[in-house]
Image (cartoon, rainbow over all chains, first blue to last red; front, side, top):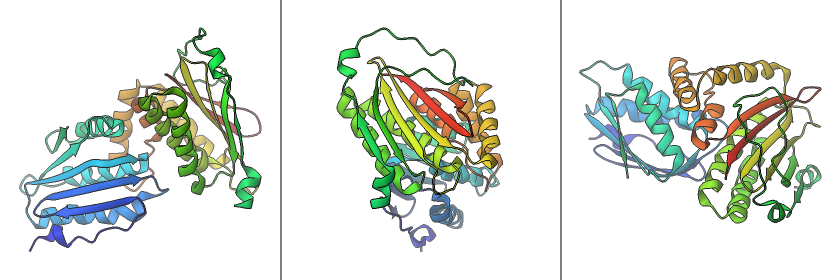
Length: 126
Length: 193
């Protein structure tokens, strides 16, 4: 049974998540609340833990329909990248972001995110 | 709602059309301690209590206003980011007193767009804002954003502090911050249309 499929989904107005095992996560909507970490940090940590427990070699995160986020929400992706960097080589996985190059925040933020972990972050810009 | 209306005022100025095409003074500094000169006529002024609940509405109004006025979706998207980050910053750093206000202004001379917020900063947070500005001064917009990401990665659990760096890099707006007496802080962003 996929641990990723068992991750509890967050409840947040204007934002939704779809998890499609074995390794696809789709984020949709807008994240612009005051402290997104309070609502979403545990969810992102759960995704990371599940990816490790499932021994996935790659997790795809489709953010093409995550149309707008505030900078506090960008922090969530920084944290995920940090957790990934802290893994040993045998347990590490690739985080592949599927982005829309027409959406400015995605074009700029994910290219910079990649500088934190060039070997672990892959950006597919469509 | 009545309280919100008490604080809120909105003035739309339609003089933009008459000023289109007029020559501009370019902004060469990125972060300044001087109060910025207005970029053309004032188009929008909104004043409200600095509480988070109003940010979404004001941001989306500003995006809609820019899209409708300038007929450039890309400009509207950049304005949306500037509005989100400047409003968040102003709300976070505002004094929590009942009579504190947050004023946002949008002006343009037809070639550049200026968005500024004026708020009464909580003294506890003013130093943090100054330090952030000093950090930005040391880098170009992309390098500053990379540095802000690296800092956030080094400091898990701390505030993200990505907003101002994100705004500069993502929108290519130039920023200036000035104090306007008695703890009032104006954060101004100027970008090309």
